[in-house]
Each structure stands twice: as structure tokens, then as C-alpha cells.
Image 1 (cartoon, rainbow, N blue to C red):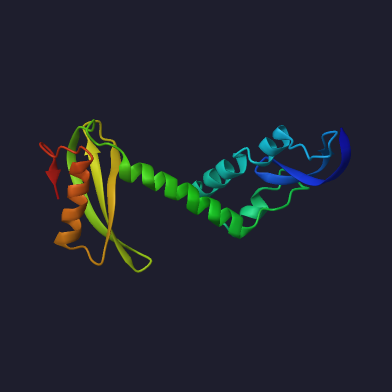
Image 2 (image 1 turned 30 degrees about the vertical axis):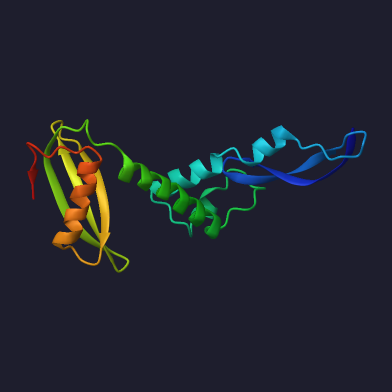
Length: 169
């Protein structure tokens, strides 16, 4: 049976949109969770919109201005966008760093170190027969030294990389 209403929201177009949520109770007086309402609050569209926007070059500072498709929306803050981007990019990085490499037909492996935020990241890039480049792996080290590169190569081999035929530089 209906038991009044209360303020709530649903996620639409990547934003929280305010709405009035009905409250439902059993005859014994227990609150009944509304499954469809809960689904509309966590449909993942905002996470996808954040990820796509950031990948397209949108900064977290300007994100709020870019999501004005629903003018009554609320809840899009820099910190929310930043947290969701960190989670999405961590998941993508995990995929890259854990994927199997046994199906690749490489003609070259390029290894280089890059300074990022005071840390050295050693990157292995593979060049396939088709001309397509793909990131094979990343390894963090204090410097771009033999030990760091050796650890990266050992990780690539453990994931199935067969360097025979590839030219390393």
C-alpha cells in the first residue's frame, strides 16, 4: 500500500534528476524497496558519460558545464567526475596490464621510460604485422634502468609474449 512520498532522484543523461519517489509499505508496516527506482539510480550511464567525456579531452573542471542536457539535474561535481574517471581508468589499465599476449604477431617491441608526476613509467609498445600499435605493458620504477626493464619483459613473457622474430629497441 502507498505510504506517501519523498524527494528522490533518477540518473538521466549522466545527471541526477530530481523526482518525487512514492513510498510503499506492506500491510504490516514494513518499507518495500522499489527495484526499478533503484535501477534508475545506478544505471551506469553517468559512469559511461564521464569516461567518454574525459577520454574525449574534457577536463573535470569543465564537466559540469558540458552536461546541461537536463537543466534540473544536480550532483555532478568535479570530485564525483574525478573519482569515476579514476575508477574507470584503473579498470582499463588493469585490462591492459593483465591481458594475454600469445595471439600477437609482433615485428617490433619498443620500450621507453616516461616521467609522470615524479614517477618513471616504463612502457612496452608492440608493433604488429598489420601496422597496428598496442600497449603491451607498463612498469613503474625509480628510473629507466635494466632492472625495471627486465621486470617488465618478464611480465610480458609470463602473459604469453613470444619475442621471437621481433626486434627490440
